[in-house]
Structures are given as structure tokens and as C-alpha cells.
View 1 (cartoon, one colour):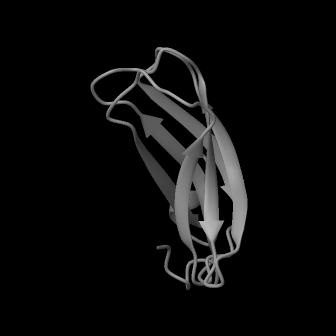
View 2 (cartoon, one colour):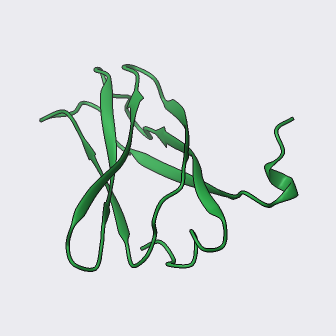
View 3 (cartoon, one colour):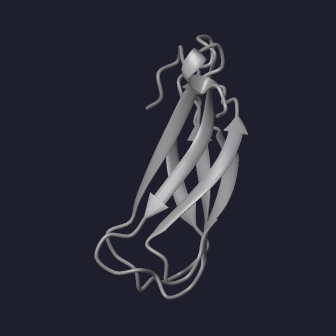
Length: 103
């Protein structure tokens, strides 16, 4: 669940980083981040690709998400996978923060 105040406090989704732990997937995978509101409505927020035979992938998103009472989940475009230990990290940044300055 994403705190409902995130959008109102100026946060936006900047990056998604994904990785495989034990075994890399042998085919490229397109992942979709979905948001579900309190009424059960599903919205596709963004997609990113994780290349075949690679441990890590990073995607720049730069999307403001309406986080009011939403929970997020990730789906993928394959029916079977050779990779294992998949994890994804969502990085939110505050648009008014000095830490948000590009170097």
C-alpha cells in the first residue's frame, strides 16, 4: 500500500529497479506496474523491460501517481520463467527536495 499523502506531499515515481536473485531469466520480460483503488478499479501505471540474461534493470519513470488509497502490484508478459528470486524497488522522489537535483 502506498501512503495516500505521497502525491499531496509532492512525491512522484522516479525509478523502478528490478533484479533476479539466484537465476537470471533467459528471455526478456516486460513488467507492468498496476494500481488498485479502494473501489477495486485497476489502472496500468507504467511498464518497463528487463532484458534477457541480465541480473539488473533500471527504468526512469518520472510519473506522478494518484496514491489515494491505492495498493500496487506487478505483472509480467510471460506464461513461464526461468529466472528466480525476482525483486523490484520503486524509488519515489519529492519534487521540491534539494536531493532531487540532477548532477
